[in-house]
Length: 124
Image (cartoon, one colour):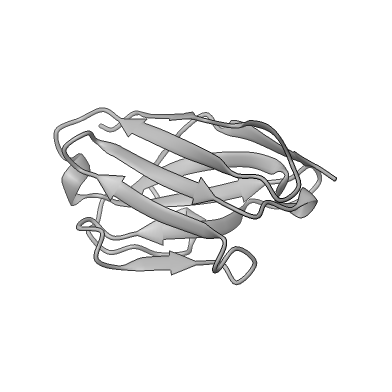
């Protein structure tokens, strides 16, 4: 069983930066692929970024490529999402997710564990 807790959300102006953190409990964190998803009001949850168990492979949605960076520190059981050059359309609740596999995927249904979400609001 893995529990995920996100932090780092908030209100930022367009062009600004935020770093989200996701702290995981459990001894098997290092063997889990991790992902970030987001959901804006009235929209479906969408893929943002994912990282393999070792951090050697990363994947990004086209909408965030070049602006967001996903990383992980297995010693700290934490995955991060560095968000730069934020835009109003990045406004959403951001969710951390864990998958009982070493391989990352962009499909939300492939993830077994989810955090409670953290709100990110980007003002224009």
